[in-house]
Length: 178
Length: 361
Image (cartoon, chains in turn brown, orange):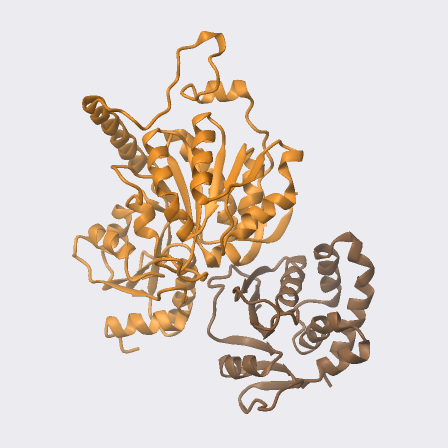
């Protein structure tokens, strides 16, 4: 098993931390993992992306040109990464603010309304967990249980009371995939 | 059982330092290695092991604090990124000339000048050929994973103390910023003053029992004696060249073309090998782990049956000069690199290999 994923959006949407939780979840399942951010001087508002690789074997390059799965959360990222999904791969995108939807027909495209669902949850900070839920429904690379374990591990103790809320957001995300 | 953790290369090296029993860190923040100081501040080792963590007022101050600590036989280090390391070169030359052990971490970024904050390997010349003045060398280790960022801190200090010379961890923004699994070593206690006296009889730490005076200096105005000092340095360097060359080889036994790359580029080259294999092209990889001393002999040996060598670096071509020296122009050596913070994709490297060696596969 080897899954090469890129997650891309605006800085502040939780792209890097979503990748981090995914990587930690892989660690909980004894997988090899790499997490490579596009680090930069930009803060909230700029574009951000992260490459996460989960594999049963030693991982070679942490930097890639094509991906099994792309999760994109804004138009710029869609423009940049649509062409970089491997044929037969998966593209998941949040429809919020997208005016030029993807056009490829050799990949599996999932349009989700994650931002809308997050508005319904009345918790903007849960957005990345909604998106992660959707990703895991399409590609069950790690179990929900591992994600919850990862959250427990990465969140400081004083934030552990937020884990049920994150779990709810993950489930809402899973339900976005029909 | 040892715990497997997930962390950035920069974080791993901070953890590794505390666990080695480091006495002090002196640094000044700069991207892409600011997490080193941040992690140390977060871990607060001064409350547990008594290790000093100090944000100096500049890189010049930091390297001279390292010099001072090292002269006392303490386990000290600094970290910075390219422009900051340039500022430290005078201090490095003094440390080498004074024959004291110190560890310097360079998480390279794109240059020259203030450049960019993105990954680069363009400080190879500076690190391996001596960025400071005079006939000196320092041991240069090139980690290519987060685990190695941790392990080479220990190795770096071990070697620095063994040979009384500065050692450098030459990483880049990729290895510094990426997160991977890492197993941290069991913590060790900091050396006691008595242990330091025993291990470093040259250190300046007070004349207990009226022992003869120790002098640590790089100044020697008597030319004859300065030549003797230099000859002693050179003997140490030959000793290091004899004993400490390290490298990793993958599929070098039976390859059509040999890739030579260090650090993060060696990781990308492993992906190049995977893609090439699918196309029926056999590539080998030689990854120098010590950039100084450089594995000249091994490159010569591993490329004996290869049709060519591609040196892949995040620079305009620096290590390629050592590779050419290694093969004495008996093998065709080409170069591929991206500059100023751009990282090539594996596909891009493979395309370049095919183009430069006219491979039609």
